[in-house]
Image (tube, rainbow, N blue to C red):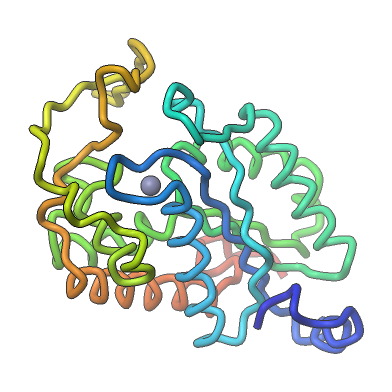
Length: 256
Ligand SMILES: [Zn+2]
């Protein structure tokens, strides 16, 4: 069910059932020469919608603006500051809780959101963590389903942006938006800007659109068939998470 297609009275009637609200968050940022800027939010929203249909969870309107600083030199990218993004998701959670919801899951489609989302969870813990009545979670649909996706194709081992996985996903959801003629006309030369290694995080420089086409990975391996299988794997895992969305599922039992 889509939250913004319902009336407030219909929503009020559902509250005694303690429904989960899935809030998709994504990005509006460059995705190479072959994918649209909406790739991350399209994926998060479509996976959320399918999981919502399967489980009866509510799906809130997608949030297309997030933290995308990495791709700022690529025209069209729109980024919030990390604090703006955290304030935004925190306000969404607070509005839903004030409206009577007790279970909120932020379904993320953009890697760069992970750290701000986790920090936001800590801030919400200070506000709602005393009584244990409210459960707020966040996760990336592609990480939640990582094991199943790795069995289908390259997944994220060869890159994490506009790669085989993301390209296949958009081929499945919106094939009209994929420029398949632009998949093979360049040589992939990885440049690393941000690294997570042996417990350390470091940043060297931001990607530059004058030297970089904005792809990490090899989209030439993408296909619509892989996209269909990736999509189904992601929907199945997200549906499982939201269907079992309670403290015990997260190993947080012990409360009443
Ligand atoms: Zn992406």
